[in-house]
Length: 239
Image (cartoon, rainbow, N blue to C red; front, side, top):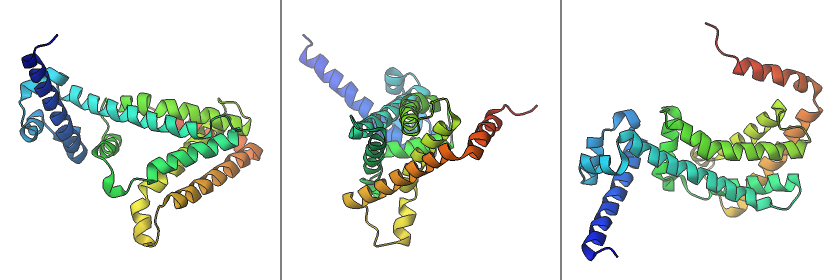
């Protein structure tokens, strides 16, 4: 059994670690990884450089821990949204996912957006090697699951380029409502994202998405052109 003194020391270590993380996420989100030093973080956290090295190894180790935490949270949130339509038809499962995801995106006011969310936005505009963590832990699992769901809705194989593009369009449309929220509320002051309004938006996104991806299935011209477009996008640049 650990002595009271050892427990007290462990408690101080944990407190220091959490304080460093709290300061670091704010500074990285505000300035970006390349414009924040360990000294900056330690100064605001009231700690020393040795403590950061002890807990995280170095600045990138600290940054990767923050990014990993956010990525895991992103995946968990989408996993919860997928559970909204469990056991139903593909159409209703898609509706349930969109509704659950939209509530996650819009239930929180922009002023309450946490520093972790701002950190992700900063990482995507000023990428570091830690971006791979966001992709592999926070984006790819849900993207693959949504792609399989769109495949079920359309009856097309997962490998069909229209399925992947359809899944991306659905996700992008959902996120657009979050990213443009401040502008929309400024343009239309009466707009209030109540639970009922969010349900309405989610239903619109669902119907719009279902109509769009079904139109792609029926449109032979798109069937012929989309693979070529994707191939051109994915082709390596010429020397």
